[in-house]
Image: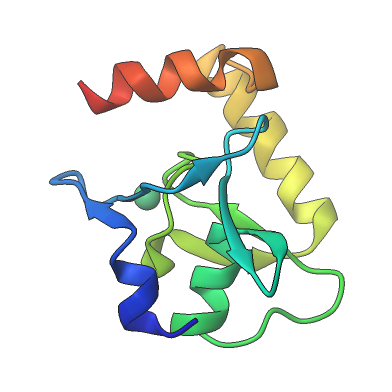
Length: 111
Ligand SMILES: [Zn+2]
């Protein structure tokens, strides 16, 4: 998959986010089928536009929208840093991501 092919499945929202138009997994992340294997769309976005993700690193969504694949909203962090940020945001917003409420949240965001 190249950048052009990837972008065909992206809808750029005026808030700056790139919403993945393909499949969404139960955790709320975009899914992309490459070589008969589903991969997380935001990780693929990072690889295509910003470069490879080092072993063991996770991708943090700076915009906190899991469906977003804008490489500018993605930052490569360690898993410790990722969980620390998640905790800080959860407290600050009084809102914790759960697989069951992701869809509802995204729908609200997209209105
Ligand atoms: Zn975003």
